[in-house]
Image (cartoon, rainbow, N blue to C red; front, side):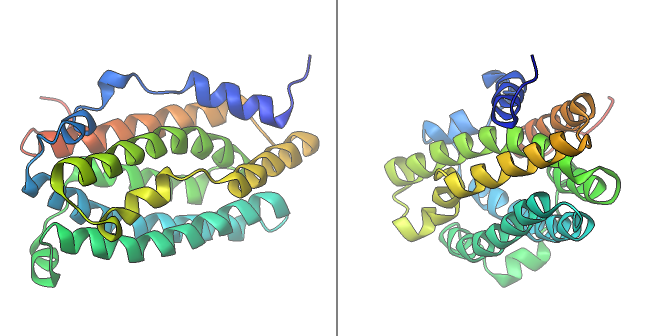
Length: 226
């Protein structure tokens, strides 16, 4: 029996859900055991991720002009990244990150591999396939953000405005969910969606997501083969 767009999104999200053990850092933050330098590094790495993802989403929206629902989805994502960038400034300041520290920071390859792959998708993947892959990944990311936001308040005494970056991504986004569903439905109707390929993209996204957190947890550990 043919699955609906909503069923496909739900099963893909469930099937690609990461192993809880794949993230060594968020549980540490949840217990209040991550130090200030680690939180600052999280803010600094996101300074690279957020604008890169925004540009990638704009590129995907441009490439999806013939697919109105997909174009609307990526446009909404790009707008969200612009809002997140403003919230990130407040989180970074609460971590003691100023302009001088940000300029002197060298990003970690293991952290920046995620936005690099999103940029690859923006150039090479079919937009509808990316909708499915990203939606699955965002579920895990939102859960991590909810945990971090709670921990920043409970263990680090961060004010609400300093937690807004994580609150933003943790909050339910029913309008975006509806747009994703419409985009997948549009692609299914037109025969443009390759589920196997989208799942491959999703697995790689989850892998790069895990690498992001593992690198922040062990920033001096070499990336790649030993």
